[in-house]
Image (cartoon, rainbow, N blue to C red; front, side, top):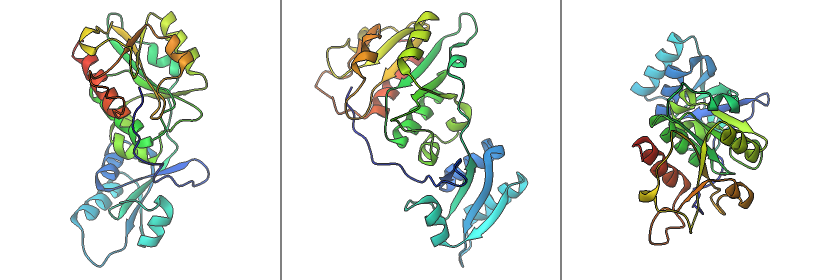
Length: 258
């Protein structure tokens, strides 16, 4: 399924080669509350005006044992880039990716959905899909190690708490992972621009892998050939449906028992 992206990578700044940033009041508070062990430092922009939100975050960081550093707006922008940071950011350790095979381990008779993203480029699309997947009970997300967005600061900001709660794995070869899933009893469904089954005609089995393609050209031909079922969303040629929106519809359908 061809989909529309929404811009480039935002807010990632290398520190020692393995550090990223999360910025904005809500995202920073989520990080401090749900993954304080990953937070290395809270940066707050120096201001003459008091801010209830910033003061709350400063107290929260202190309670969590996180160092608070007061910086200038220029210093923060040099770290996170030209983004809407709301005067706060946290420096995070490298995201801890899960083992891909572990996503296929589940309790007997339990339903399991693994979302595979084939070269999704925009970290905000990745973050949105992570958030939806976690909200509806998916087992995890699998992304390629190369030529795809990783769990950067921008992805974490959109994903919010899902970045802590949802396992995300990176693999060198998506085809190998899909074949492993099939060997474990999973059925593989792919979202395609045309020629697939209508969603109302699709019933997801208990063990499902859902493959979503890149923003520009969809699922690669080789990967699509491995899929058991192809799904086309929309009856009016909606080929430009955003990948995170399309994934959200399909994940919701799975969660509803479709």
